[in-house]
Length: 177
Image (cartoon, rainbow, N blue to C red; front, top):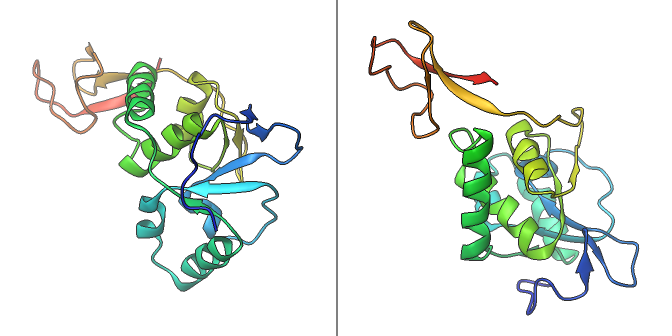
């Protein structure tokens, strides 16, 4: 059962180990809620296991782990790259630390992210990380802005949805650009 990979980039390109048709799959929490085929090398981050609350998800996690799924943290540089890309796309405010870790691990392992989360898919698109949706449709690329619901003023990504507008005091919301 793999738990670490000595050289994350070795022998991988575009989510497929060299000389193999099997992809490297990076599994989001939603991948453990249903039973469906996951051919290839499977990886996730420790935070995913912490997010699993129901018996079905925990059982599926355990089975996949017994079958060789690896669990590891991503590298620091990849985490920073993901945060920068998510900030540019406007998704940083809605991505959890788990989501950011999954994307960073996909960068480290040159893998395909398995998720239905649109914010993860949007940031993955910006980073050229392949995505495999589970049940939902594939999300298209979007750019988001923060806008005041009262006065309509736009703010940079340093402002967060749910904060109050410094101009009029109304709530700030994320809007499609």
